[in-house]
Length: 294
Image (cartoon, rainbow, N blue to C red; front, side, top):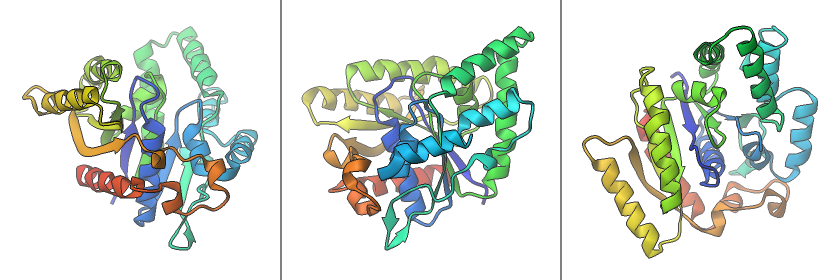
């Protein structure tokens, strides 16, 4: 089967996108599925969390070797060399073990220079007379071509998207089978949800993207305020003219979802990385995600 493409995105930061992406990716890999993560966030937190205990060293090496998503953009749109996404993969990037074996999880890391590269790309192509839509088409076409090649090598490809919407992010969302929108059920976070499911998804639907984004409630603390907001979110997702669906799984505000790779030490087990009830909750989410992309 051709790989399913899943994007984890929200225009608001601090809602648990990276944790959702990495936990799902590791759960997919542990279930025996060939899994690739592509990190689009300039903070490179997904890359660091996957690399684990020596994440800084591994990320520095990838940047030094020109093996990041930023380098893919540079090579294809500045150096005029057709370099495929597959050439920038770090294989077996995770330091996690499962059932006594290394977790088979591949990664295309991000880089702090990605944002600068995207800005320069916009400047370069607009200076040549490209409109923003034409720029998005250029990036989107190259991305889709490369993704089509990768789909034959993997079962699932996950994108960790940055806050806000960039040219790369919009191209990725348009190519996704499922868009997961982590959202804290509180007043401020739902404002970001309205922005994402409103204007941003409307633009995608205008480009024939019919699948509704699926909201994942994260960092749930059980307070009366969050209970009310979560209930309102569920009601909105059930409405006839809804702009989003919702997962039944709720990610709680618990220590097991905030493990520090350095504190875990080298070669942690999957159970140690997602401790307590965390792994069981992740497996519940995995079951829902697999059903949606089947």
